[in-house]
Length: 311
Ligand SMILES: Nc1ncnc2c1ncn2[C@@H]1O[C@H](COP(=O)(O)OP(=O)(O)O)[C@@H](O)[C@H]1O
Ligand SMILES: [Mg+2]
Image (cartoon, rainbow, N blue to C red; front, side, top):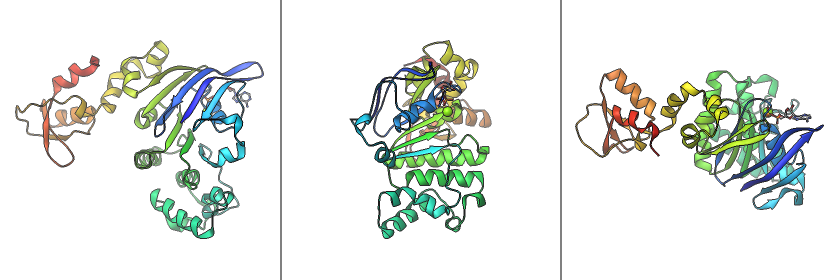
């Protein structure tokens, strides 16, 4: 869906991105993570044809982006940035409608789409006639996401979109994004320097350092097998096992056995939630159920501890 082949970009002789290759499958939520200055935004801007790579090739939906009109390319890709970038003299409604208007959608189609997007992102309809300055930062950010989604692009690029938000708005929008991604099957490239955000959202992760790709793959893979000390340190050596508890589901460690446990946990819950429940109820074993309440098996505290190195 999105492929970067040995892409490099220099600014005044200094490499911002160096020999960067990555394949992002359709429907992935790929999180580009790395410290500030590691080249994440530059990668995103190159995918969006806002800046051109010095070397290498970028393909979008199988097409070399150099063969595409950059303006048309950008209309087909949703782009969300931290500073939102809403047009200050346009109402919220006009802001959301910006790309559909550029694409010459009819008034009725634009109107129907706005209704849809407002419901999807749980935007208070009374905000629509207002101007951006009359909204809180969290509300503006939500509108920024709405605007990027309005024309229903199959690719969405997000550059630290939630970085400036208070923790509650941030958690809300992260949850919203996860739901939206799971339902829509869109391809999302999400940039962040926040490891917890990366682990929460990613289906795939790409770790950058000094313009280079250091490691890419599934979250668990990177947590369990960091390729070097940079990745290990970036994930916070000591906290690594705790982070794993957060992302590995009970389903992955439960056993089909029936010793008899009093407390119940959902198969989709995290190991951290399981451990928390064990600690709260002072028990070492939980009964595991699926969404419909059917008994699947049990998870024992030993399953959690023993599982740390398996694969
Ligand atoms: N337009 C630019 N002109 C000069 N240097 C730039 C420009 N954009 C980015 N850089 C430099 O490239 C490097 C990578 O930047 P960036 O991609 O913004 O990193 P990140 O998004 O990971 O923080 C940094 O050293 C930055 O200073
Ligand atoms: Mg950046």
